[in-house]
Length: 101
Image (cartoon, rainbow, N blue to C red):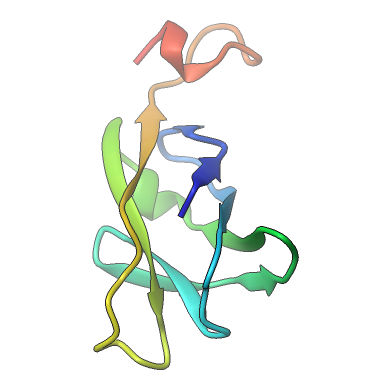
């Protein structure tokens, strides 16, 4: 996996993540906190996996390790880990998480 967007999310809110990488299996799924979530895989020079993450999985502020697994072949090795930062609300709705945690 190359990256995840957004890399910072508001703790306690639902978010759609876009992960980019190569050599992803057709049944690729996001694993976050031990929960596997299927999404939509798009082919291209870089494959993209879009996954809706429920608020309960990002309910606490902090750094989460996420990776991609093959949901149809759980014995296959997972991707490298990426980090997702969940932060507290700031008083400015458009402010990035890095301005407050």
